[in-house]
Image (cartoon, helix red, strand yellow):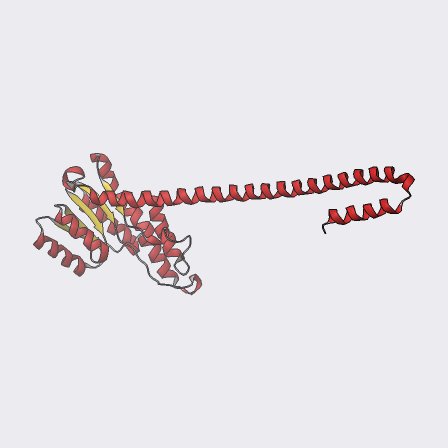
Length: 269
C-alpha cells in the first residue's frame, strides 16, 4: 500500500469504530483530510518535477555553451589550416618584381634556413647570407652561385654576441653590407634551442643568455637594420621563423625559456 492508501485505511477504521449517530460528521472529516493530503502530495510532486526540469534546463544551457565554444575553436583552427593550404595553391609570385632583387637570410647554412636560401635563389633572388661560420657560409654561397644565376654576399656575424661590443661591430658590418641594395625580403631564421631539456636552476646561465640574444635580441636588431630601406622603397616582406611550441600546448616543461623566446617571435610577427 502507498502512504495515501495506508492513511485512507486508518481513517476508514476510525469511522467504523465511532457510534452511528456521528457517522456523517466523521465521514465529512475523512473526506476533508483525504483531499488535503492528496493536494499536499500533488504539490510535492509538482515541486520535484519543477526542480528536475530546471536542472535539466541548466544542464542543457551548459552543454550548448560548451558546444558553441568548441565549434568556434574548431572553426578557427580549420580557417588557419585552410589559409595555409590556399597559399600553396596560389600561382608563384615574381618576388623580384613584387619585393626587390635582394633577400637577407640569417642562419642559412643548415636546416630550414638552407632550404629557404636555395628556394629564393631558384626564384631569382640575390642573397645576403648572415651566419657565424665562415666555412659553412662559403659552402652554401658557392653552391648557390654554381647552381643559380644570382649574386651572393657573406656577412659573418655571431648573433649570440648581440648587445656586446663585438655584436655592435657585426651589426655595423651588416648595415654596411645591405646599404644601397634593393633588399625586399628578410628571413629571420637563426635560432638556438640549447641547452636541451633541463631545469632552469640546473642550466648554465650563459647558455640561456646566448639563447635569448639569438632568439629575441638578434631578430629585433637585424630587422631594425633592414627595415628602414624597405620603408623608404615602400615595399618588402619580413619572415620570422617561429616554433610549434607556441601553439601545441600552453606550457612547455624543461624548455620554458626556449618556448618563451619563440612566443616573442610569434607576437612580434
